[in-house]
Length: 562
Image (cartoon, rainbow, N blue to C red; front, side, top):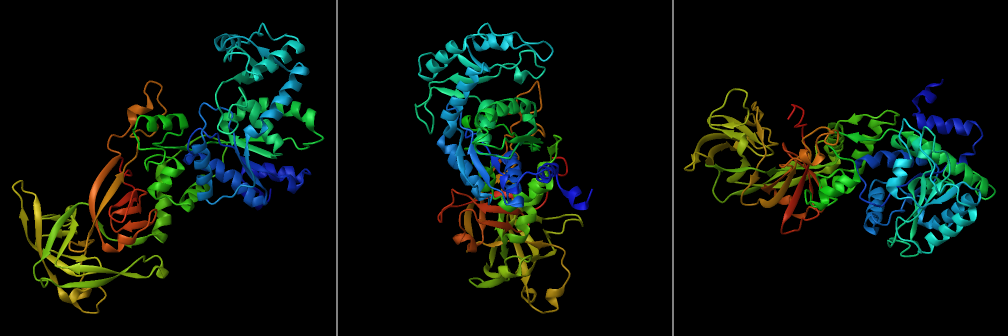
């Protein structure tokens, strides 16, 4: 096997083999088929990346198809959000399709299956069908309605379509094999009665096709060459092929290329829930503020938190394509956003837990503008001016009256460097009645100005602190997010509900002070708050009320086992 062949993932190898066996390259077509019953999450990005990535690799079209066959759970809001998320990730689809576009064709094919005695109307209750279906170790038994005549089945199916029966009165089932070891082949449901308005077809239909019947036939109608899905659908492949082959027999002159289903492992992420149903519960019970809450693993939540399309795509590329399920450490995703923002985010100064510093020998009323580099990783980022004055804020944790030799920040009698400014030495501090430090008094050395070429400025100082000038600082709201779940596998316990693992301290709202250059920061803009982490401007932010979300810290705060 050539080196190039070895470097291909198994899906690419399948495609290369098909092309080598005579499939015309122009027949390649892929699709991403979400159900619009919730917002896309990080798990979907793997499927998105695979399908659209193959489309880019082979210059083949990729359809965006909404599998919208359940009007109870589906909404136009979700359709719009899905389109926005995929576009934001940087992908372009060839055609926007809907399974509901094919309702009439699916119905017509179902009629042909009835005429071929491959489908029948069942009048059992759902509970009766469940019992009659058997178990993985015992065969099922035939429905008492399995041998209805073609004429009776056609009449009943037409009556279902015309709204003559109540919900649950009848279903349409494929007639396959009630003794099959694959329980999905034991006369699966094809249609159920539902008197619910559809987000696109309104009240035109009161019967809706089931997923297994709809999905493969939609692939076939769109002439998708490779139907790629997650491993949970591997048992469905045999049913997929059964439906496909029968429909192919009806329409091969018009639709010559039957699709091929192949499966890859899902993306499972630690400390994360991937079920849209369970994510919806978090929204409905106000555990989070909405689908785009920055603690949510949804693409919209990640975007609002400050993640970039590049970081997510790099994460998916690193995870790769495999056939085996495993759990990916969320720390890898966090590493990817740090890696991206390190090279692209401008540096600014902000103080989240302020304590006042007075530089006693700095002239009262004097101000100056200091020059600061925006991003040392990117020379083109340029410089900005940062105001400096006699009174500044530093982080409370950056000062101790006394400390051991390993504490390199500010302590009484010791010198530190103020980022982009001067060296200061702490001389005394004031405290309140509780013993908490309220003011730190310092002196500064005017010959140590950052960027100056004096001997004094070349002194070795181990500690460098960030700061903001009190007179010029802007007050800002900072939303510091932690992981939403405290358990690595919140959904992996048989005896406990995932809601028991919700982190009650996943959001801390902080009143912070930031440098004045951030007055003009735009929604979505990303910054590194020096020494603190990466932050972005939240959707709620205004010029009068700056709001920042903490995207990720500079280091993995969970690395020590917190």
